[in-house]
Length: 451
Image 1 (tube, one colour):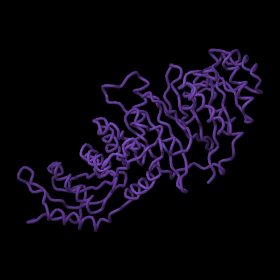
Image 2: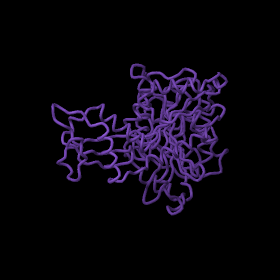
Image 3: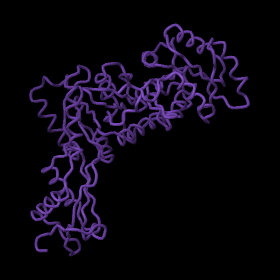
Image 4: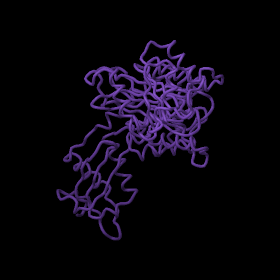
């Protein structure tokens, strides 16, 4: 399978790159705000148009003369995106007109890259098209394509133009069977460092300042022949500590990334131990139904302590009892310690997620555990489990048909989950049981003692 062709959107801050990115990929994948410098890392999305597909990259505002360490990293990320792109969309703001920074970027693009560059003027709406676009021909490009990313004007023409320079669809197939991995955790636990270590490049910006990552950044890659998509997310703060709106939207996207992933890697800070927010983040993963792995990062700072691993594992299990089924790995994103053992665990929990229990075997199992410990009566009425079936894999979900669904206690549901996990495993995966009235399903019933 050949890789998708890549198109990178570049330009100075606040010209509408993320708005155009969202318009082309079809959804609010990148955070958009009137504040310059919102996008910092490269953000990837797949565009499908007229039966063809390509990978689109949103980049941070390109300011070559920038001086601060963080904004310099933004520039470096944009440069990396351009180096790896097959085609570059140079976006300018028609409302602002041609600026000296536009001219500087155009000069750098022509000097640095031997690649096709498509100049696109954004924020153009008829009937002002001609007057707004004309001056941009001074940049020396053969044609200028006007669009309004916000309203969609000219976007179809732009896509048609881009496809003329990209390989045909049979050479660029969308990867549909990739395992999606979200790296989540509270701020400054090392999520971006872990992503960069796994990918072997400075894929996302790393800074000691909490909140550096704002978007949920998707990166497709291959490891040992297996296709993956790795998502770096913004640090998830407690509700009372969310700051300005950009941070709020970054956290919201992090939570949504957990909802769409196959496996969530929850990063813990081994030096500070488990805190309440770690438990809350694990709860998001349980609610989303994804598989879950706990990674205690910064282990290089503690591993020399006697019995450190046993002590930390015991604390993690005590403080995160609701995810006691999740494997734990002690790692160092800084040194690379045990990093690639993560993939062994990922494949293990995915395999457990795919486990299926045939109905006959499942009902024999349920009959056995009910005989061992019958469900407590509800309002003097005996609870009878009539039939059980395994209905879905993500998460492993079981439907039990009973004579009184509301009468099954939470503690008995927990007992059934523990028995399922003890017998069948489902390591790293939350197990869900749904109780339904017996009128929803007729079949063999699982008898309680004395029935």
